[in-house]
Image (tube, rainbow, N blue to C red):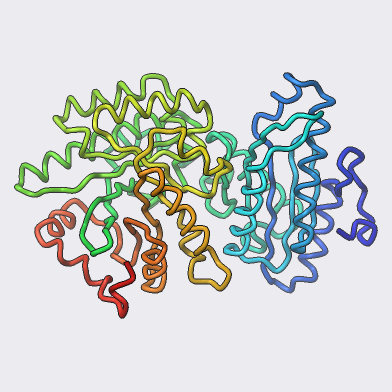
Length: 444
């Protein structure tokens, strides 16, 4: 890794570059890059203190050396690897844009699916990952490392076993946070939230579902994207009333569409890890169904891998209780977390949603098509439906069809729709079939 070349001090436990030398290396890379992009990835082990508490500090040191050995393997891909301190590590991938960086994070995630040897026993560890890209996310080594580390800690706070992007979090910049936090506390009372609906279509281009997306329109701040305020709402606790409002609003809209003589498909609703783990979540969902007169079969709850891994047994119990009400359960952003595919058989799921990270790389030579196909085969073997997220081009559409995905959603079928636009679509659903007029209609 060129540590002597950079006069980098070495961490005595792992043999990796220390944090200060890593930041100095980044500064040199910035000087040499002439503005070209590179990636900084910070990795934090989830619940690592449990290893020390249960097995002793000697076992903890052994585990850190084993993880360091795994991560050092990425030097073969041109990475510089560092131990920042404690259970945190960092990697620098030169000449790397965000798409390439996401492939690296997927490879890092996959490396945690294998156990490490600790004092003659196999133990499984998971990790939270933060990603920063130069020059977008920082102008020096220290700022890039700091922002990637902050993104990693956000991933931990949301349940761990996930990837967070430094560039997607303007809400946490100090100069904006205070104003946004105050505005967020008033947003529900001032009726500033609304829902938009993104279509999900099947192999024939027929509308099969709608994913409800939360929109916040502030009179002074303008439209605020969920990436900018959902994490903040989770920190402040506002996510609980906001999450309940989303479920209630979607259920009431289903009732309204049906009262107008329309037949809406199932509505998919995102559930925050904080919301899913909160006491009484299942009871609150059932209460909303009862109060709105909505059948559970009308909705699908999308839950991230990080939510499920907090307590696998409790998660499975809650999911089974929801499914008993007719509610379908989807695992969202599948593939970017650290849970192995073998977890699919341990949970009462109905749907797997392949993360858009993989869809965006599906047309690239040596890209993600084999990954998408493998996930689809394994999910189908478990009797699960597969949805490809983020389809934006005909080429992407053709390849997710070739990979046998059941449903697709994305901007290829237009921007998310308002209540009125959905009503017009339900009255004339043939409008969505146009993207499927491809040169190879027999792909399926």
